[in-house]
Image 1 (cartoon, one colour):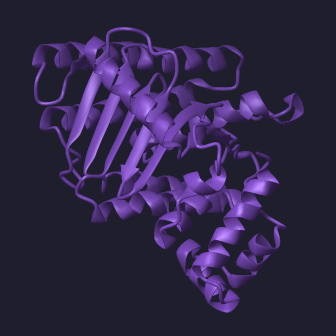
Image 2 (spheres, one colour):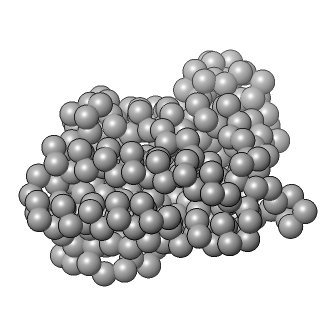
Length: 321
């Protein structure tokens, strides 16, 4: 099914839910926290609703996205790749992030909410408050996806204030989820150190830059170790399960379960993800993440020896940067 057809079905569902146009615009403006002019453009088809906008609206208005998107093809598994151009974010791309944070924020009202992620790259939900780490991943994205002429050094990269606020908001909001599961590749920090050494070797990261990153990495390890020892986020007291995978993880998979919302995601291009609200996809990714625990070691509140060995190894490696 083509996107314009999907969008038309979605608009039809909105009109059936709230037939009076003025009331529909008011409702959508309140749900997305945007001006009415933005909603007018969405309804006219000039700028289609984003994936996360559609999910947020569907949840608030009790609309089934499956029945809209797949219609008579409900068995089709569908993922949407929504790329954000981090070098020059526009208002729509900022809104994508802010709408997603609003979705996650609704977890505070759901005692059964859950986020789980298997990763070979540090997730933003962990490093977002550490400035040099946020800059590094943005810097790596810029290096790989900008043209050669547009590449800048780590020192010259500046996180836009609005994006910086989004990172902080996301970090704080994720901690409202009732249960969080992390499964990390045992080489997750080794991969990062390898990247840092590469950029140092091509003179895009200086010795002083490395010192900043090293300090943040050591502070991050201390923060994570505290979570692992207590089994919860210190900010909210909500439980966290940390697993270290004994096998290499080929990709980053995650799922989000909040109220009636089910989202599965696969990380792509460092800072982006492909996402789906398909129930079958959600079930498969959830099963996959849960299966990874069989080849992983739980280091939260148990596995004290393995936990101490893991963190000591990471500190030694990072200190030698």
